[in-house]
Image (cartoon, rainbow, N blue to C red):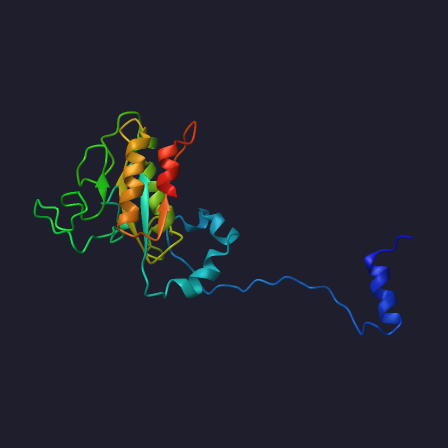
Length: 210
């Protein structure tokens, strides 16, 4: 004989084995955040993942999180990314490899395509999409919130370490990807972001991730 859960609970109350019952209603705490970023009203996904509730506590944290962004570089002049770049305290710009990591003047990161300290996107060739991708991802991660411009990034107390592996075509090899992962690990970042795609997994990349 099959009985419904409702009938079973009613029977338990009737025979005295259960004193009362009620639905376990779900509740969500409202956030006090009212952001003034120009396009925040279009960022529907922030409410979907309850970001405002996290901001109630997370934006006051004194600990900065470092995110290595392995991509095509970022536009460091963008006003919504002001002050977001990671800085190597042991690497002044003087033409020397002061911190001994094998890279000269890598104050904010490294461009593995040009083999230089220039972390900006390589000159655009096929439109804006490939050229701007890294800047877009950096903005989603850490654009300054509540600053009257642009959008609000998910993390407000974050530093971005740009590691450029994509060329002007938006393409990059696994050799530079491995170097970028190794670089990020050497500098003990908290998070590595790789918004990339490929046809197959390379064994060297898999080993670097391990």
